[in-house]
Image (cartoon, rainbow, N blue to C red; front, side, top):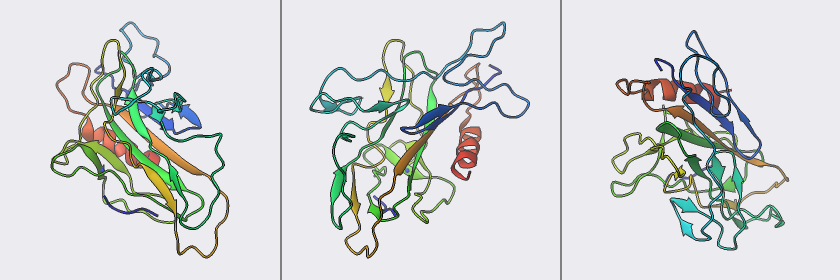
Length: 229
């Protein structure tokens, strides 16, 4: 459950958080994945995986675990999730879990989406929403939390407009806020079973190859398709 707190060839990236990175080619247009370039006579566009942060601080642009333990999986990074720690499901127990989304050096500018699927169905969290002053996450397309699955969120500016991450030549770019910071076991839960919580992200090239066409509509359509699988 959740609480509120969102060439002429284009590039499509679908990432399964903490498990697997998967790219797909859709429709009659050859979309480029983040992990493999398409073989053709043009320079291939790209969305790369970010580097592991080196500076052991909690700077949002360079999120890193304060104890130096990096928790990087593809384009998702959870600086305070410790896989070596036992996460015992007891009512009221709170665990640090802070999924940032990022793109690596020489990536195309990209819109980013994220959502969570909680198989235990008893974990509560507060999404870091945009608030008029700070960038944050916004619910997409009327999606709602149900049966342990969160709504779909897109990274936005302080006004709630989708905000693309800007690719850099020699550095990674991250969302400045994670989707949420912690998860807490529902204090009213009467039945608690062990299970996984999976965070997903979907990343899509922000503009056409010539930089003229904004591709947010295509990005949202693709994100919804993945979210609804």
